[in-house]
Length: 332
Image 1 (cartoon, helix red, strand yellow):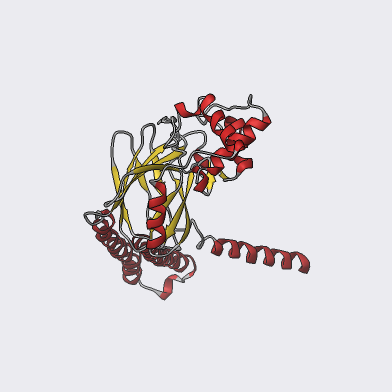
Image 2: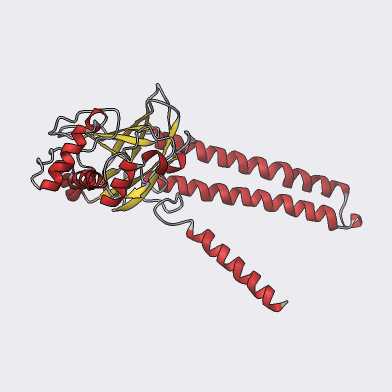
């Protein structure tokens, strides 16, 4: 029996530890890394404390009513206790919490300063189309990964062409819905260099759970270098294997849906693949990017991500798949 009690205590300790670890990490609203996310985390703790006080007041009144002897208090005292603890305290606290929350709305809805970097994000089933509009450089498109400069205001423009999605990077900002036919906006300033994880927070269909995107916050110099690299089209392949992969890409109709700048591939239906080899993941955060996962994705797309609109190319031979994956991996 003592052994069972020790196991139960260990299980409770492990549960508490797991609960606490959920408050930190690359996808935690309680580990804020931007001023906006910090305000949301502060609001959470204020609401939690306020709700806790109301809960304690109600539990205390309930226990008093259950166990106190009638002769210990008068009817007038009981009435004052009920009015004070069950009416006045909750009303005052809830009103204060409401006012505190409403005061945050102007700060959360304020746009980024004029001339800030604009990033247009389109949530699609089930991936993210991302267009960068630098204030002092050419615009370009990428997909499924966002890079931001640290300590720099950024204006996000969010929309969807199909169903309602929800853009959420817990460490950096609150949730913002992406509604067909409507543009929503979000301004944020990342306060710390690092890797974070964004997700779709609104059920949007079969592969909703596999609709994520990494967010990489860079120092300003590294971000400027990345911007410059993204606007340059990749060089034509010289290596025989890569040339074979490029030929396979064009001959099998990949260019009808995807763009690779500097080539005849100018499709706009699927993700822009111009610099796909520089992204950390493929499939909207589904796999780490490498030749093996690229080949698997091409050969059996609908199996690894149900409902995806890209057709599978399992009919291609293994050497052709290998060459095609190697070509895509080379697109840095």
